[in-house]
Length: 107
Length: 119
Image (cartoon, rainbow over all chains, first blue to last red; front, side, top):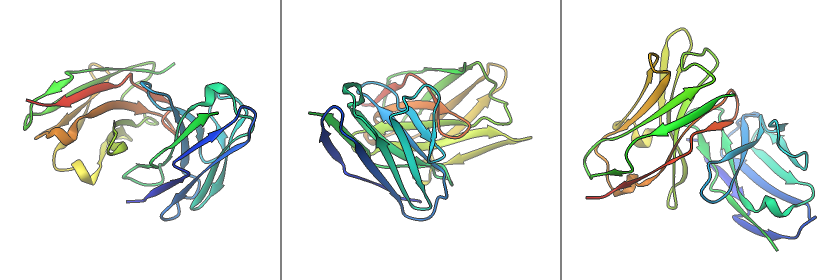
């Protein structure tokens, strides 16, 4: 199985801050990397697919980059509603695997 | 707009079979571009992909190794839905179960079903 490792596991930032979350794959996944946002009691919501493509309806402050094994999710200017858990997912091969999640708290 | 709606019991006894259904609207389970997934989430395991079914001139299934001996995912073309059966459940199978689909990432999710394995 391809292991997906996210860092940090949690972070706290202020409104307006630039926030970066990283995801590393245990082997190359080219650009088959997706990012999700999940709020308590809700299903995950797709933010970024194909490493850098913004899902329709997602605010442009969210962006993704990377290829191969190293990827980042960036929130350019943090908003209060961005408080959530963020998870990466590889769909390069089965079994599809997820990172362990990054909990983002707004100070 | 594709929507997924889950149904099934929230309580299953140990050693029995967990059965959930995911009804599809706005797309076809037989679509040549769709893939229909089951995912679960628990505090101990996080998000865990269980398997998928998809049609590309014939039906295919992929399953996670961790459940491969106990899982069946079946499409039902007559009802435009797909199902999950997980046999011989234990308390470790307690989780929120989701169905999900998407051409790249999974952009459509069911509402989630909390399944508790307990006698």
